[in-house]
Image 1: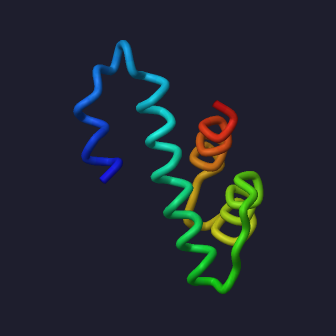
Image 2: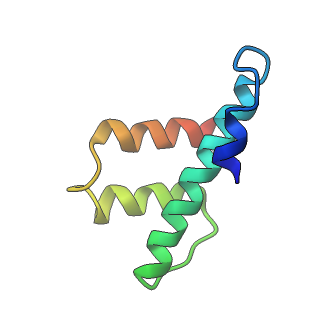
Image 3: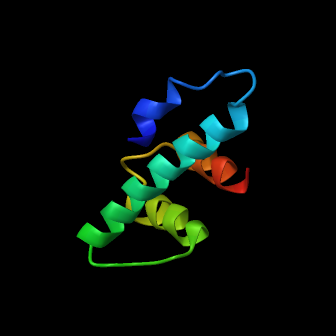
Length: 73
């Protein structure tokens, strides 16, 4: 639902909202990965660190850093 809504927002005036929505989508997908692997965390930092450690062959360093930057915004 969030992904479909992103296209409805004006990129110039709602850029922070769009950024937040993309991060929320990524966070939910990472949470699903942890769940499938049998883990759960509420820490956003731990979610990204889990990808960095356990899925380093699936994600480039750039992608992990981008997720971490989105988290900080």
